[in-house]
Length: 440
Image (tube, rainbow, N blue to C red):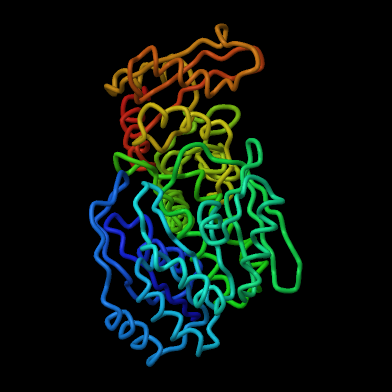
């Protein structure tokens, strides 16, 4: 297993600093080690206190790691004092461990994270011994004295920083209309202008996450340019799902993909587990001409790819129901759109199943004591998704998400009853109640 070391401040809410770095390392399958430079009392709105770690204690932390294992790459975040900057430079000038220096000077919430004397240490000692320095525009201007308002300015500033001795310079956050660009300059003279869509609002921990991901990729053996490109892609993917956990700015989550993959595996296993239960419980008179399906979604689904169902639907096989194919994400548009629309009104609703519409089946739903609502396709506007529109229309008419949403069909559209629930077990429980109230 590859190893990466972060030397940075501690963030009480876990959205930046060492806490963010360790999560970013873990997202890449890299073992993270840490040395704390300063303790902060902070949240998503402000920093109320910063206490630097004494230089001898910082030295002991780093040497304790290096005495036991050799990191494949390391990074710095907020260092805060010149004395601690000197400690880091002294150690890493004598090692061959690639070092990423993120020269954190001010937090996103506006608090200073570097004493004035540290600026000179960055220029004189830390930047010269690093593999990559990753300042944002404000940090670049402080470190070089060059005002940066467009790419040409960034190129000039990057050359100034490169003359100090690092192997590469990445200047972040250069405005480009509705986009944002980063400028990468390497020792061999090669350059990259990396442009992405600018996400609205502010986020806590983006600089930490980016530099940690770059460090993680370096530890895995990627070169500087590849590490930067991969890390930026991973960061911008995470920004789409920024978390509103506090009362201030959003927090980015580098572990979201890992958690999503774990949840996907659990969802697929849950559907496969109840395959035989569906076949035993679902009577053929409940299966529509187009077949049935049972969907189960990730939390807060956005697209059909966030909803799993059976790839071949649930069909009639003689006098029995038969589940065809395997559980797969993106397998059903119909139930996926119902779940996505319903989850907007109640995020606990993550499962749905379609069954045959007729008055006998609808009466069984009523006798089962299930809440119901409906929509008419005659009222459907042009150019909308029938299931999304119809589901929302029925929910709005009922005032909340009901157990059952039904419609009488339309031109080329089979009438349908849909059972909604929190998970497949909940849906099957409701299906069982319907079955118990069917005639015959």
